[in-house]
Length: 485
View (tube, rainbow, N blue to C red):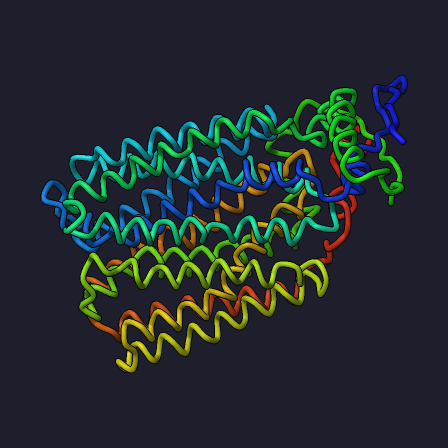
């Protein structure tokens, strides 16, 4: 049954668009959404791993000659760009639509990543990494909001967590590329690291082509006074699903009445975040900041630890990054379904808590010189099996916490704050600690990261909310569902 919307005298209307999207069986349309939009995380994983794997080679580049601190600052420039890109593109995504922005952001990434391969000194490298980060940061806001709005409620948690976890598919690709481009027998490392960024950026041309087939989010359209267009898109999706799966199941919840608005202002956004949803805002900030510090601090500088403390040659670093990336990928793949069955709150608490405890133990073992390069990597692989699912769930939580009209901005704000607090500081701090050359100093950095993960687990247990199986509109009522006074 397809329902049309009829406007009342005050301009409001009822629509069943959310219920119709949530009842859909999994279809090739959803697979297309996951592939075309979810590739963002593969790109980010590729970027981060390339920098991690190539860090020593970039530092030794005859044209750059970076110190360990400058390598950390290069990573921080990328993350700072991601912060500002998320805020700017997130604001535009809520105003202009998901589709326009997830096209623009990948174009920025494409050009900036290619430019990185032509950097001539530290400042040009940092600038191009900054621009690459703006594209990726914008992708997080535009793409996360679009994916959550198009995936049925019963599969939203698992899908979002698995897609976020594919960051590490990109990580594995980056590790393999690093093995090739850092092998002097294959290519001059000075040419190799540059070619890696150029080729990685060029691959995103394919993404631009795939995204032509993704429609605007019907949920965004309905809250911006375009219900007829929203229903036309949903009808097309339904016809395709019916042709492949037969009659659709009945609606599980009724229509909602909306009072459309072009956009909501910054003052209202702040009010919703810090008055109406204060607890959710605290939770989002803690989850995002804690995972960002641990991930970016450890991963961006792990190649430096391997080369400095374990004498691993630059061209062999990828062999250690690869199992690390695979463990991170397997966590969301194997644990993702449990976030929809056992529930968000117990699973997020458990994954953050386990990762934090294991990180503290590993940090102490590193300080005591009990580990080899292989056993150190094995420890991180196990730790980030859990931490990867936790980090993916942080993005899921932020997206589910706020109304449709400000979802992209909500994702952007907490990605920006979390990354700014945890991600930008972390790599620079660890780069400085590693340059000092003292294992005990680095241990304190690891223990600090562990404490943050445990803090996040406690915060989730206290402030977490149930979103599994519930429509986005039920989890957080749209602003336009309330009549303006």
